[in-house]
Amino acid sequence: MNKRTFGSRLVAAPYLVWSAIFVIVPLIMVVFYAFRDPSGRFTLQYIAELGRYGSTLLISLLYAFIATLICLLLSYPVAYFMSHRSQNVQKTMMLLVMLPMWMNFLIRTYSWITILSNTGVINTLLSNVGLGPVQLINTPGAVILGMVYNYIPYMILPIYSVMCKIDKPLLEAADDLGSGSFMKLRKIILPMSVPGIVSGITMVFVPAVSTFYISQKLGGGKTLLIGDAIESQFMSANNYNLGASLSLILMVLILISMFIMNRFADEDGGVLI
Image (cartoon, rainbow, N blue to C red; front, side, top):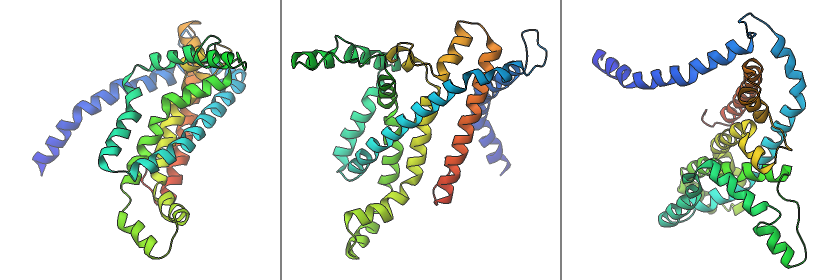
């Protein structure tokens, strides 16, 4: 028993070291800089300045919420369809879902500039039929589109994974008892897929609310999100203290959101993330 315990600890040691260096230490540094001035003295000055970014934070939350909702509405039917196909079709569809993720995130986002620009593919087609050009790039819609495109696989995969584990005899029993497709979806499939939905919402909402590259490239700098504010404080203004304060409040909001969603999943009989 002692040998097993020692072996388990030895196997877990690299993970613990990795977590300490790349998770715990950065969090401690963020908290330290958030409550210190450039001279190292304790201060609440930068926490008090967060009020200036209230509207930016609300816009970030709104865009992330819209993008997450769109991803959910698009992903659920796709995941349902995938889970009810043959193994070969499932593998092919899984490959198609994951294929864009093999491409660099920056390249995927930048490619939408070519598609949405005034001389891009969409506006060229609209112009040929006398309906364009239409302002598509540098708009809030373009930013939300970029979020949906980049993060939708993270919604499809967990929902699909949970749906694949639903017992087929359970659905067959529902058929024998006279349940229609809508009744099976409402009474069996939807409740049992709640853990996957909650996981997908978390995996999409968290990166969406903190993104900055998408808003810079597809929003043209006209749409300022909280991620842009944090990035500018660290990279342009060299104000690490204010940047850390913004990061801290964003982390707190994300943790609160994850806690609420985990509790929701737990109350519905799901599995905590």
